[in-house]
Amino acid sequence: MSNVFFYEPFYDFDRLLDEAFTSRQAGGNNQVQQRNASVDGAVRLFKPKMDLHEDNEKNLVTATFELPGLVKDDVQIDVHNNRLTVSAEAKQSEDFEEHGYAVRERRYGKLSRTLQLPSGVKSEEIKATMENGVLTVTFPKATPELAPKKITIA
Image (cartoon, rainbow, N blue to C red; front, side, top):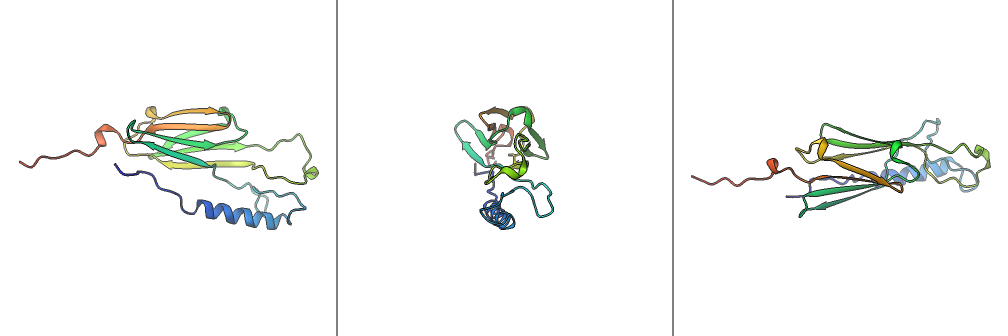
């Protein structure tokens, strides 16, 4: 069976543009860089980094998401129309006042990443664990009833 997933080709390009424009808007290196805020102050949605591994022998796909600083209660996983969506919100610490920062690179705000599931995957076949800010989601690569079948010519 061929690879059932697609790479998001503009993901890295979009992230590069976002980082370039937000650092320019923040005024360079001497001012606080608020990477998740747009010009009007609205919170920007960002995508967590993900690794995707397919094991043909075990018929298993493992998606690993980086969610630093989050715990499992902060993370939601939804399945709708054969798409798995991981979402959460990283909240900014209120321990320090806003104007005391010289550098601010940590990301805060809403995050979301959607992954197309193989046809026929049932929600009860999807397993998720989270440890040390890393979310691991596993599901079957293909279901037996959807595997290609050979037809004998009579």
